[in-house]
Length: 144
Image (tube, rainbow, N blue to C red; front, side):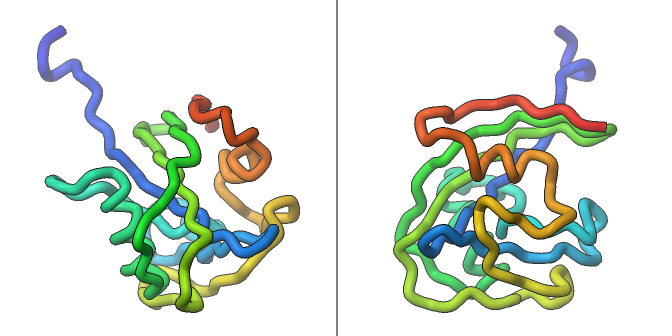
């Protein structure tokens, strides 16, 4: 396949900060993508980072929480309109600091929510991740 026909898309990392049956969410704003949606802390992997390093960096940047490690939860290739990429979702339950909005220019609010009762709107794949069995590590999503 000629190089110009190859797909080019981002690797995006998300981290579920978990406390009991609750998960920490941020209300996206002024990002240019899914603004107004409650989402997990996350963002794009940078050149030279491992996927888990990117997840820990994004959590630190967006919530102020420093993580020693994250556990892989699942991989979600996605397509939505002109957007296509790979979502890597991690989980972290072992953290000390209380997460906050550490980038107020990108988020309007934050909350702890029950995994079974997420605030809306939320990304279409988020509910599936919350209810996905631990052993189910891969699932493709397509939405319009």
